[in-house]
Structures are given as C-alpha cells and as structure tokens.
Amino acid sequence: EVQLVESGGGLVQPGGSLRLSCAASGFTFSSYEMNWVRQAPGKGLEWVSYISSSGSTIYYADSVKGRFTISRDNAKNSLNLQMNSLRAEDTAVYYCARGTYSFYYWGQGTLVTVSS
Amino acid sequence: DIQMTQSPSSVSASVGDRVTITCRASQGISSWLAWYQQKPGKAPKLLIHGASSLQSGVPSRFSGSGSGTDFTLTISSLQPEDFATYYCQQADSFPRTFGQGTKVEIK
Image (cartoon, rainbow over all chains, first blue to last red):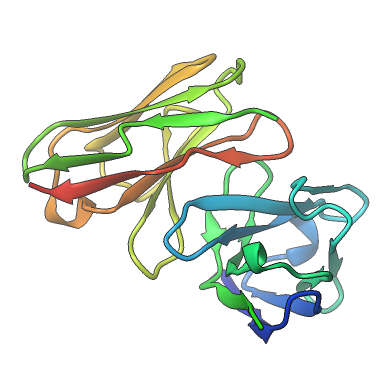
C-alpha cells in the first residue's frame, strides 16, 4: 500500500525557517517524481514545487522561489522541503503528492502556521 | 503562467441532479487537465486525468470532456457522497496551476 506521511509542521515566527519531510513507503520511491502542494486555511490548492525522480530537475512556484528548497533522499525514501524567510501568507497545510502530471497519491498534510 | 478559471464558484444541487463544472485555461493545454474532489479536512482525490480518463475506482457518474482551453466535469446523478469541492489542474507546463475550486452544496 502506498503511503505518504508528512511531518515537520508547526508554529514559526515570520522570517523563521522550517523543514518539512515526507516519508514514502509501499512503492519504489526512486522511480517517481514528487511534489509539494499547499492549501491555506479556507482557500484553494496551490502547487509549490516539483522534483524529478533523480532530483536533477526542480521547479518552484514564483511565490516560494528563492525561499524554499525541495530535495529528496532516495536511499531513505524521503522528500523534503526546506522553508526559509517564512511569511504569514505561507500559512497552510502542506501536502506531498506523487506524480508528474496529475497527483494520485497524497499525504495527509502537515500544518504550517507563520505567526508572531 | 497558465491561469485556470472555474465556474461556478459554488452550486446548490439535489441528490439525483446533473451537475456540470467548467474550467477554462488561459492558453491551450491540449488534454493536460486533471480534476480532483476534496472533502473537508481530507487530501484531494484524483477523479480524472488527461481531461477525460476516469481514474480507477472512481464511479462512472463522473465524466470529463474538453481539450484546448475549455473543459467540463459532469456528475450525471449527484449522490450524497459527492457534496465536496472540485478543482481542475493543468498539467501542460510548470508551474502547475489549479482552478479556484467549485463547491457543490446540498440544495
């Protein structure tokens, strides 16, 4: 059974940093592209970042470019999102999602709250 | 970036009704479109990919159509478990973008 389990969310002050992780199981992690998608409270879905199976190709939304860094450790079946210079508008549930074009498998999400 | 615009933003319907949701892309995306259903507190669920291909396990009352810039999601006979928010997403290019969502509510 495919499982994606996010962790690392929490309360952080504006300007602070947080590192999210997504533990993958039930499939050959190194063969699949991965993404982060977020959802602000009461709002719609926003794609955040993509990483290819090898990690060689990466894309970001303009809203996070230069502040967030996606990475993966295929040996540990782990996807990461390093978030720096956090802003109030980054407050959201962050989901990891598997897929290149559409996203069939999603984690349960981890809540990031940026507030003083 | 490709902008995705859904309409309506909400719709009130009864069990058994036919519901149609429209998604328009700001430029042509061929058939690179997916539809998701999301219920409160849950992750989105993929319903349709490639504009019209029903994901395995999704009931056949859901269907998708369109290509280029105009797409539709149709629920042929609304069931109680279908009350949710629906999103379209373009998969033509990065950044991936979603529509703003359509909430299907009980009339």
